[in-house]
Length: 541
Image 1 (tube, rainbow, N blue to C red):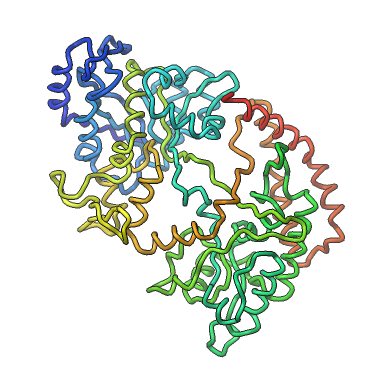
Image 2: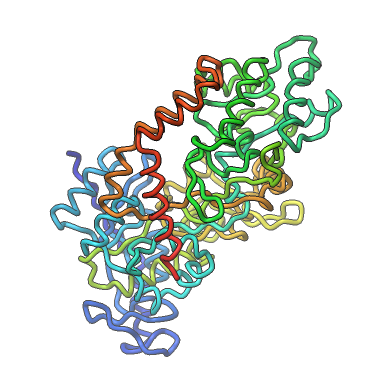
């Protein structure tokens, strides 16, 4: 087992000590009474520094391969200056993270806190065991920003709150409009091709069929060759949601409609989805390599501008020059079985920065105030974007610019391939933060392609019709065991989806398909998920 890398950062403590002395031993910097931490040290309820006497806390952290020297990291030094709290980073390489983390919980050799790497399983296992602290009262007393975010985004609170009201982990909050549209579910349609074949943007599945047929037959790229691929993607990817959402669903597996859990692959509308996709496949409108191609093969088609409608996990990053501007995002469609457009909404949180305090922490009040600062605008920018250009003792950083009337970041990263690489040397990369609308705009509009991508997503109208599908719920131990036993069910659905669409199995076998799913436990699975969803719905009430 690889040994963890332990690095202690203590620069900036002098400034924190001076600030601490100026606040008076029993009062906060603003004159309000100070709270007593577990060690008896004063913790200021408001203002900075957070603690009057500098303190060091141990952090077990999954190290990114591009991370720089933690002892020289601007973020850690700046955090110590601001708060009086120095992070002692015990870095673990990604390959050994799960082993090291599980060993820490098993042996009790725990850090004071985590800033990343805590999964839903960890939360559900170690929280109720008392190895992670219940943060509810701490948030109420010391973390007004976190409290406000949990109140504002109640769906997030529901996913992290247990039935008894306990809450052990805080995530990254994301309220940036663009991110809520599910970037991995973004589809692109070639508007230049639409113009060339003389058709408007499709609004229904019938419209889409007419568009794809024209893409195949009317030489939309005008090169005199039949080399266009009307529709493509990766099997198991999200191109299917263009069609399936038109049938009324926000997810291809687990959805909630009118408060009731729905296993989508068993629904009559799913049969209509299969029939439609089979028609596209049989007529050569859906890429014949859809079920077999690699991502590299798809990217090659994308780069050569051979695709009419497709999905890609990254926003046209593979299209060179300004050719990407041929594409836009289509609206959510409707169909004969569903007249109300719908799209998938991404939950307003992410787990790449997960905060948790362990039972070993002697200053939990100070630590909850620390994460509350990270949720502020200042803390979020520090944690994700690093230093401001020209306002620190090194090179690089973000600079505020005006981008067509929008305030945005212009990144400086001389000597690095990307700004991400620069940030890896100066920040922890993955920490709790709040991706607010303002902050998301700062990040987005400093880059022309990113700004274009954001604009076409917003112009698609999908945000007006999106909704959450089945949320991240908390299963009880016996429920989790039972749910895990249904893993073969989804594999069977994937197998049959391909066979139905390619015509290897006719849709006359639909009833036999449903009977097999029931035999595999689909009804029992649905009951468990409904019960867990009902608990989720009540969690924060």
